[in-house]
Image: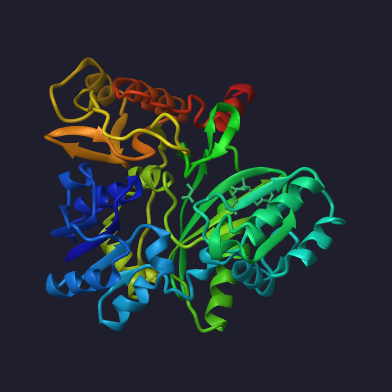
Length: 442
Ligand code: AMP
Ligand code: GLY
């Protein structure tokens, strides 16, 4: 079949890389793509938000399946437009994507479905929000209702901070329309876990557990980013957790969405907070996480095209899903200054030391130890034939190995080989798992 992927980051490069290896896929396009994606898919110069042009392209090219990467086109109704045009597409409709695009909607669904989440109140009136914040237990979490580029959540240790967050969102216009309504919720202590489930409206299958690293600096310091690295599977969580989350979170949420007449098809990403035996949902996303999708695509062992088509067609009940038992680790290489301002257009060197190119001592050693290393492009561009930086997250190195320790050391070894001015990476990806491994006697 012919597949069109929508998006242009590391997540979409990982999806395209796997789709390119799918037996069922013989034509692969990506709108709008990046230089890494261009090695495996034909670039389509249409913005992921230009939905009418994307529908036209899919119709003209007789695309059999479109796969949506980012949340923005989902929130703008890309799936509804494709379905109306009779085109198959992987992702939730605009109404179902509200699980991500409206925190108050997600909370109402969880409450109705009996899914464990932080106690909360929703406010459209800033004075009422302040009255609540004046007396609720601390710390408290103030969240813009809508999409706010990952910046809409403020954890407030004191009342002044809560009042400021309420003012900025509801009266100061900090997040535009997305912040006019806020959700104020209880702070949940614990360890975060990203949980993916592939859904076809009726059926769901687990599709990996991950730990992301959102703050920009080591030790979880500094402002939140889209994610500075991830690994999978996180060994510190009990074996029964996957089944429990499917039963207590994913299945009830799907059932509630069906009851509301808006079945969820696509990737349901539950951001969980795990504290001992307590498992709470912090947020839902309606798409693959990035960078989590990168270790996932390394571990996934099947025909991705056939699998995503089965989800889009409501046939997940008989689709096999196998993830490698090996560990995969992704380290993001970012531009200096990200998530704030950063320079673009800086030359990138060293990729040939990791993949393609001549055999090298490192490549031979990785092969001998059954380590697989892959570099996915996020914000890169070609300028006069030279690969240059073109975004906050520039590249990400993923390594998969029989042990987590070897995957981590290999990913960092490869990450050191890539050079560009101002390259920034966290040095402690997977630290929570590694500290447990090194302190647990075996
Ligand atoms: P969200 O955009 O909802 O994922 O929130 C961003 C980050 O804020 C999450 O990844 C958590 O680290 C943190 N967070 C959000 N809600 C809570 C909460 N109720 N308790 C503790 N941390 C939270
Ligand atoms: N890595 C977190 C996200 O994709 O939302």
